[in-house]
Structure formats: structure tokens, C-alpha cells
Length: 232
Image 1 (cartoon, helix red, strand yellow):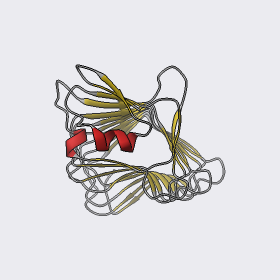
Image 2 (cartoon, helix red, strand yellow):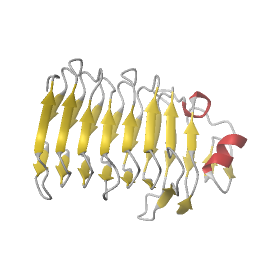
Image 3 (cartoon, one colour):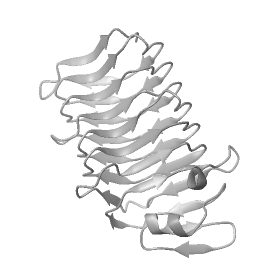
Image 4 (cartoon, helix red, strand yellow):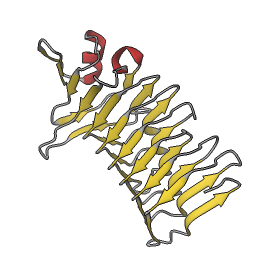
């Protein structure tokens, strides 16, 4: 991984080593080179707090090559906690024991774009609290491959999820629950999940909006959308 600041380029063999060595600040970009990385990455306020004008960016290759984070029995792959104005893009995250990526505490104004999240033990991306607000999840792909329960498990509020594909999960493509309110799900494709394309659970999961999504019942997907106590 290569860290680009305003003054220099600095390289480490793994992202974890880079984060433990350098301070990442507003306007910085971390380039994650082609290859396979077996590690858990935790990005906290110190390395993930950008500004609206100068976000922090973590990016894989954009030339068609692939940077893969491989779980190999490790727990959550990426854990974003209490970060703002962060960009994570163009990575493959697969084979972690629980979640490919987890977002928790006060994560706001972040963008996750172009991620491929495959075959993790529980969830592709897990947004675990409604204090995660005003984030954008754009053009991400979730594939269950008979292991991942849900592509996206979502408890956040006032977020936008657009142009995602979620397929082949043990339970469903997207789960919306808890106090997940006022989120927008648009132009998502949900296909070949075992039970649900989208499942909404809980009386407090209200005022979510779904527009121009498509569902395909291949491989016995029982419901396109199921609402249990919440409001669509």
C-alpha cells in the first residue's frame, strides 16, 4: 500500500503496517496495490476523518487490476468506526468469518464505491447503528456463494444505497432493521437469494424509500420485498 500526502509517497507492504506507521489526514490518498492481503483493517478517527473539501481516500486499482483482502478465517475485514468524509473504493473483500466491512458509531458523509464483497460468514457490509448517517453506498456488488447471510445488513439512517447488486445469499439481499429510518435504496438488483430480495423488520424501521429496484426469483427467492412491522 502506498500513502500519498501533499509532500511525499510512502510505501508499506500491508495496509495495517502503513496505518500503524503514518498519520493519515484530510486530503491524503492511500493507494492499495494489486495483490492479495490477508489482514484485518480498522480505520478509526485518526486515519479516517477527512473534511468535506478534503476527504481521505482509500482506493484499490482503477485500471482493471484487483486488490483483494482475503479473510482466511479472520473476523471482520474492514471496520470503520467514528469516521467522517472518508472514501473507500475499488476493493474486493472476501472470506472473512463474520463481516466483509462493518461501519459503526458516528460514521457520517462517507462514500463506499465499487466494492466487491463475497463469501463472508455473516454479512457483506454491516451498518450497525442508526448514528451512521448520510453515507453513500454506490455501485457495490455482494455475492453470497452459499455462505454470506445478507449482502447488506442495515441499521443506519438517512443514507443512500444506489446501483448495487446483491445475489446468492443464504437469507436475503438486503436487511433493513432496528431504527433504520429515511434511507433511500435506488436502482439495486436483487436476485437468486434464498428467501428475500429486501427484508424490512421492526416498527422503528420507517420512512425508507425504494425506487427502481429489480428482483429476480431465480433459485427460489421467496419474496422480492417483505415488510415486518416497519414501513416501506
